[in-house]
Image 1 (cartoon, rainbow, N blue to C red):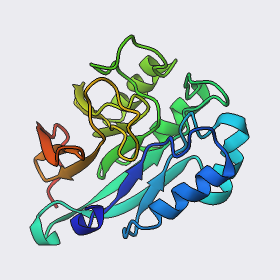
Image 2: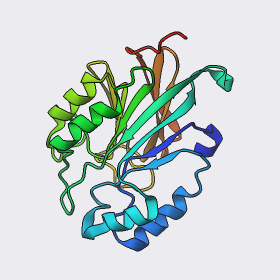
Image 3: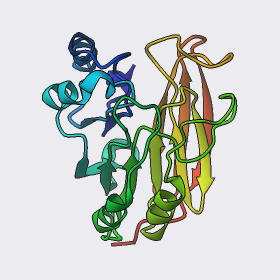
Image 4: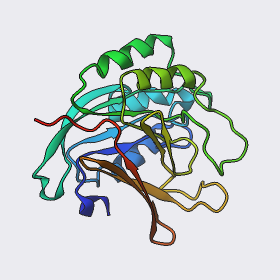
Amino acid sequence: EVNVLDPDLVIVPGDLTANGYRDEFLEAQEYLGCIKCENVIVIAGNHDCRNVGYLHFEEIFGRRYHEAEYPFKVAEGGAVQERIKVVAADSNKPDLNDGELGRDKYGWIKQQFQDPEPFKLFALHHHLVGIPETGRERNILLDSGDVLEALSSVQVDLVLAGHRHVPYAWAVDGMLIVTSGTCATWRTRGTKPPSYNIIRVTHDDITVTMRDLAHECDVVHAFSRRHAPRES
C-alpha cells in the first residue's frame, strides 16, 4: 500500500523491536527494506534502546538524530512543490520507558528551524500531549512543555510521534501533533486496530488519514495550515 501511494517521505517513529536485540533489528530492516521510497527516516523507540540496543540501531539504521530538507509535492502531478525541513530526535532514556530530550536540545531545535520558508516537521518517539483511549497517562516526554515551547517559537507545522500505539491528532498553537498506531503487531489498546497514517499536505491544508488495517477502512481528519507558504 505504501509503495502504491508513492510518498515523498516515510517516517517510522520507533519501536522496531521488543527488546532491542540484534536479530530483531535485522528482521525489521528486512521488512522496511520493502518500502520503495527514496526518503525513509527511522527513529529509535524505547523498546529499541533496551539491552543497549541503540548500538545495533546505529549500526543498522544509522544516526539517531536527523536534520534534512527535501522537496515535496503539494499539488496533483507535482506541478507545485515546496521544501520540507525535517528534524528527528531520539527522545529515549536507555532501559527506561520514560523519554526526555533535555535542555541542550532546545537551542538545537530552534537553530534547525530558523529558515521561515520550508514546511517544518519535527519527529520523535514519545508523545508530547496526552492521547485519548490509552488508559492512565504515563511516559509522556518528561520535558514536553519546554519542547512544545521550543517548537512553537519557530512555528513548526507538524509533529509526528508514536509510543502509545493509538493514532490521534491534536492541533496545538498552530502545530498539528499526530501520533501513530502500531501497524505490524496486535499490541494495540482497547478496540483500536493496527494502523498507520497517511499525511497529505497541500498549499492550504494538512489531511491525516488513519488507515485501519483490520477493517480496511479509513478515518480522515483535515486541518487548515496556519503557516501558509509564501508566494514566490
